[in-house]
Image (cartoon, rainbow, N blue to C red; front, side, top):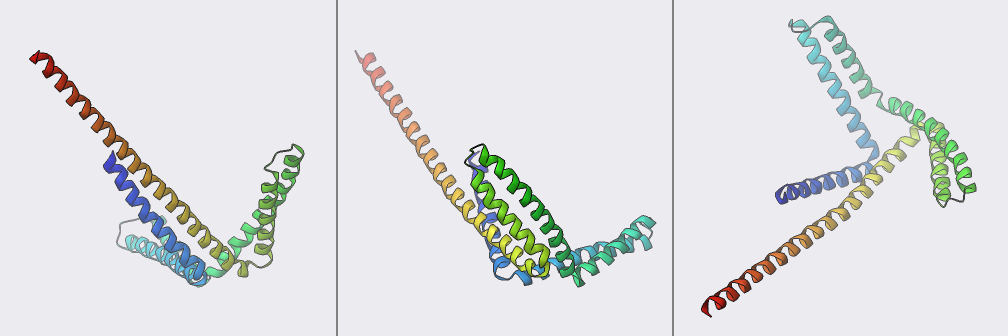
Length: 205
């Protein structure tokens, strides 16, 4: 169990480092990272499509696989060439969702305020932020790309920081548990030694 927890903490440390590096890259170079991500996804689609087409012509698959291969290649080319337009459409739809959701939550916060619940202020702040981000995404989806990607990067950095704190606390908890186990073992050993001494004295008498 201890060995498994040791592996788990090492794996968590790798995840923390990878998340922090990705967050910094997204926050500092959002446009470059967006292009790399689009080329990676588009390239993967093209490769999968080519493999499907080759399998068809070598007699290893059906016409359905050929159709999927052609569609996959076409989709990969579109993603590589027009990834900004595709992202803009996604951000536009996301903006509409954020705007509607923010308005609904803002109305709900009024009912929360009337019920004298302390969480109404946080709900209002989050609702206003959602509405503002939704309006920005709807009115300027091209300009919102960089902001959203940078926001994702900052969120990943914050996640890495929080995960690092949890990792340190977990390490300290493991050390404390090991210390207590060692103390209990020492106490048990001392009791056994005392018992043997008392038993030998009784035999001598």
